[in-house]
Amino acid sequence: MDVPLILTQFLDRAVTLYGEKKAIICDHRVFTYNQLNERVNRLSDGLREIGVKKGDRIAYLAPNTVEMLEGFYGTFQLGAVMVPLNTRLKPSDYQFILNHSETKVLFVDQELYNLIVPIKDNLKTVEKIIVHYHDGSCEETAYDDWLSNHSSEAFDREPLDEQDICSLLYTSGTTGNPKGVMLTHRNNYLHALSAMHHLRVCDEDVLVHVLPMFHVNGWGSPFYYTANGATQVCLRKASPDQIFEVIEKHGVTVMHMAPTVLNSLLQYYEKHVPEFQQDIRVVIAGSAPPPAFVTRVEKELGWEFIQVYGMTESSPLSTISVIRSHLKELPLQEQYRLKSKAGVQLIGSEVKVVNELGGEVAWDGNEIGEVVIRSHGVMKGYWKNDEATMEAIRNGWLHTGDMGTIDEYGNLEIVDRKKDVIISGGENISSIEVEGVLYEHPAVQEAAVIAIPHEKWGETPHAIIVLREGAEATEQELIQFSREKLAHFKAITGVMFVNELPKTASGKIQKVQLRDEYWESIGKSGRFVN
Image 1 (cartoon, rainbow, N blue to C red):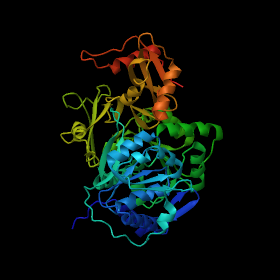
Image 2 (image 1 turned 180 degrees about the horizontal axis):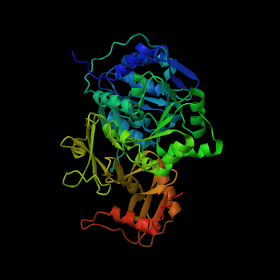
Image 3 (image 1 turned 135 degrees about the horizontal axis):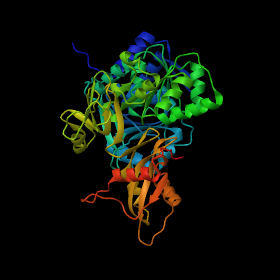
Image 4 (image 1 turned 90 degrees about the vertical axis):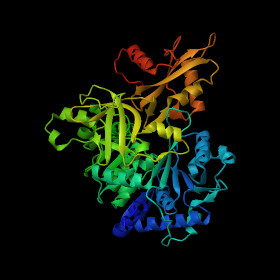
């Protein structure tokens, strides 16, 4: 009899083989896998009591905590769907996502509850709000009290099919409103098997959750580290000093993070020079770093640098950049150059770069095409958006919208984003959304937003503005205007004023030309914006 690939099996394995092992460290609390399982059972029992059924959406707005992590398994035992929310959005964003997803129950951390208060009366389907770390300042149900009133005994699970949706993750695209990516149990299960192999996950690992769990379930890490009985450290706020503190205190061996966080660790290291005895590997997802960055991590910190590439729609990882055995005779600098690329496909994934006719580009590192992916991780589709699904998945291939090249060794390198999505500090920003806000300013006649390099954030949004005749506005005024209207990480950081924007015959603004003109304006010096 076939066993369906259901994510709850991962926690079951950890409980069976590592039940009394230290599993989760959160603040000053420590939980074994048995204790985590008991909390998960209480959560499932409580959800069933308030009427949650298979297929219902359960949203979480929380930092990296045990309460967030146990939500995945507690939700899945009922066959419900987890909707992790980005903690850096504005109340209006949460209103859209919660209503669009038709969320039934919302779990929210006390420190983030103020983001829900302004929209609470506008939530159409949310029947109950439960607050983690409740401090008595709001009228909602306190999580700890609620959890303690329910049974920790083995939960009578809902029967599930591996093609059932487990997660609904909202991601920004090139349109203003985010799209809900439907991932199935099978998507995440097979992705976990592949990722744990390539990242060499084992029961001796100690992971610190630096990357927020709302990012594609923290890039799936709660699944494959749990399956292997690893110890997991939750960090509410991932500041450099806190990260280095837990690395030393708990013997951390592996971390997943955005390039900006790693950059902050390098800066901290320069001033404090901490030393560690254990081997540490750091998994980086986001904008490709320069080879010099890889060199610093491996030579100064002594950590192993692993670059990966993926997207929410592919569960997410599709490639990994490691030096294969037959290439280890290459000069060290060339190896660092290869490590800074997106790399080669993971087992279970097919990754190609294709031209406009659908043919593969030459393996010469020069010919540019679109990155397309076919794998067990590719999403079921976008929630309530068949048109966008059909546009993204064509003939069985996920069209990423990322432009790349393939070098002579078969390594993928991302060179541009076809969709003009800006990646700042690991967060996706829709240029069209930012432009829409700028158009609300009375002095703005036309606006285009492009990505420009930034030393700290990798990229930031930069606006090119045509002012209305007779109107005036300063750069600082428009920056402040965007910060008032958008989550701060989406706000523009600079402005260039022009008389007109380049357009195609059909009237579409030519952003490629704008980017070229920007580089020309700074003399192609490659200097970063501060």
